[in-house]
Length: 159
Image: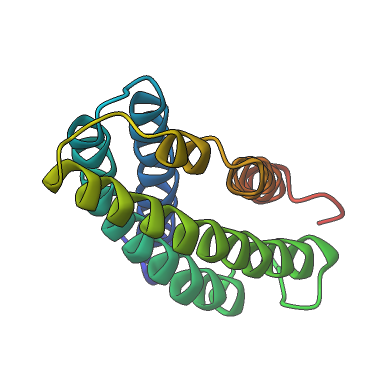
């Protein structure tokens, strides 16, 4: 394999880690929403940590090898093309939205862990945090924008 194929392989690996981690974290969050006991909720929220590691590695691979791919492209792609700029800006936005929701989700996990250690009784506050419309909106927006980026990468409009 040549340099371009290696760069593409590493970029696509980053995409799989990013998307896979996002889906796993989302499924675990949905599983936590279906529980009432803080100890059970805490388990599902703790299980998102490996998914977050995969997402972080994916972000790094996508960013580094995406930029490198554009500069090494035998197809004539360059960083000034609209689809490249749009994908980059959306990628920054997706990560900002994910970071904002992640801080709130961490606080929810910490609350679940505290409640689990002090009686493990269902909590209206914990349920409200799990169903926080801001977190849900940020997560949904981040996921949908990720799909838009994926579409840009596959179809390369205007290229």
